[in-house]
Amino acid sequence: MGAGLSGLTLATRLRTHADVTVFEKSRGYGGRLATRRSPPFAFDHGAQFFTARSAAFREFLAPLIEAGVVDAWLARFAELGAAERPLMRQWVRDVPHYVGRPGMSAIGRQLADGLDVRLTTRVAGLERADGGWRLRDDGGKDLGAYDWVLATAPAPQTAALFPAEFDGQARLAETRMLGCFALMLGFDEPPDLPFDAALVRGSRLSWISVDSSKPGRSTAPRLVALASNAWAEAHMDGPPEEVRRVLGDELEGLIGRPLPTAAMASVHRWRYANIPTQSGPRSLLD
Image (cartoon, rainbow, N blue to C red; front, side):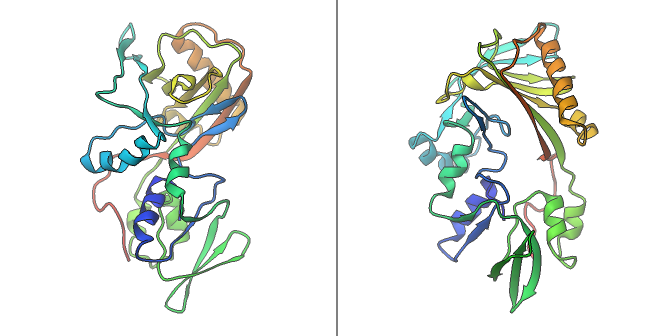
């Protein structure tokens, strides 16, 4: 269950050994490799980029790069808040910071090709049936019986779905996940900023992206600013309008001047966005 990077990769590896069905509650593929579209704007409002440090992951990415679905983002990078003046450097192809093209969600769409993926389907019930498991959606509809059920959903969601006797319940219960907000701003004219990507320290914000600077995108000017996990956790159930106002004010404070009036402004809440470094098993099997 789950059509994010883990779920789609797992399904791809298993489909040569079994009939695999992937259930995804959202309308699109990729999980936090997400793109929100509001023409003429499109925002990568989840994961902003990724690197490839292991040989195995570089091998995994090679066909995606060849297909033009993944490309290097040659951003002007800044660190804000760590010193009186921003620390600046240029990202280069020799140390690539990858993004999906034309949006982060393109990676999920590519990985889902050839898989049986049921979008907008929330699995809410799981019960024993004939030596396997029968699934039902949140409306009670029968989704079929399966020999194995695998979940790549966040730990709290998996814990709520899996039976109490699942051997990994204690591990799921102790796994803490952290929330985030994504502020999305679209403009008629591009804001004049000295960076394309910025890591932010000591602020309500943790990251700023000039999304329109990424390769393969439209030139419609737009920014994405991510809240720090600490601030988001403390305000997770706050009114969206207030969250948007506070993060917008914080953004203007960081860049030192007012932004142009946004033609489009929105905020997205990620209740389960990040996870602290974990120890112990990387997967749970019962």
